[in-house]
Amino acid sequence: DGGITQSPKYLFRKEGQNVTLSCEQNLNHDAMYWYRQDPGQGLRLIYYSQIVNDFQKGDIAEGYSVSREKKESFPLTVTSAQKNPTAFYLCASSTVNSNQPQHFGDGTRLSIL
Amino acid sequence: GENVEQHPSTLSVQEGDSAVIKCTYSDSASNYFPWYKQELGKGPQLIIDIRSNVGEKKDQRIAVTLNKTAKHFSLHITETQPEDSAVYFCAASVGNTPLVFGKGTRLSVIA
Image (cartoon, rainbow over all chains, first blue to last red; front, side, top):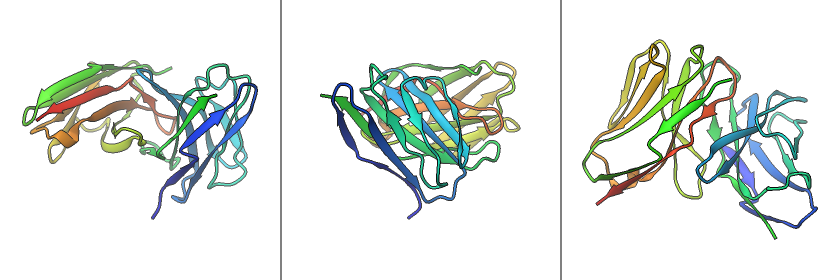
């Protein structure tokens, strides 16, 4: 089945530790996105990439980093500089054509120990 | 940049009644307006979308209307069922830029 796979589903981070969230897609989409979801805040864009080896900051990129070495993969690292990392993280992908929907994975919930 | 406002934040309806969720957007160049449904612990799923050259679109019990002059669009769910209970998000975008989402509406359908 085609889709987006996020792993792990739950992740715990200790203070001062970097953690990496995985996102893989087999939809042959060029564009991939990371969103953060907090209660009552909707989805806020962290980073996005429309082509391999290139990515752009979204609205809340501080404390996060990404890489796009392969078309299928777009991992997100939550660094120790992110002071409030507890949230639900969603990865999405789409074609780069205009007016096309994004398809979402089922998220990773990150908590601080 | 684009800003999307969504109302109400919570909505309770009796089973069989209709539900309406409204969104406004700020960028008059926006031309794509999808709606997503998110169930607990899952990612959002696209339920319907509309493009700026269309004023209304319907898919069974779900319909979306768009008023570009007023810069608002609405989701209408008729004959609501308990399985319609979820969080609904509207979004808007220009061309191939990333979607900008509203803050969501929690819909509860009471049996």
